Length: 126
Image (cartoon, rainbow, N blue to C red; front, side, top):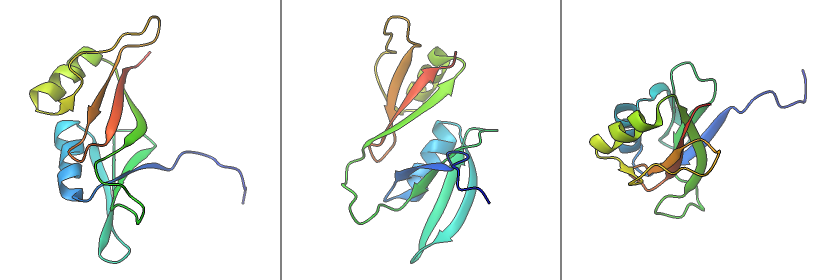
């Protein structure tokens, strides 16, 4: 067995209402639910991800030091059509930036927030 890190297993978003947040990521954002298992004392470990993606987002109960109100997750999700994704999320009532940001030679991007205020970035894939 190797002691090397071989991949990013998950990124984690804390959610006090897992059902509501999972519905947002599956029904609005379009990710697929991959895993739902008992976790700890009556909690659940739930993973969502883009179809075919190796790394998933785990939607877990908040830990003991969690601060209510969401956070900047540092997660960026790639899309082949930033304009279409921005429009679709707006149409479905998601909390998205009003405009797509364009910064020189960097790919266009925008931020959006889940129902608990966690912020993610969507970026045009190269």
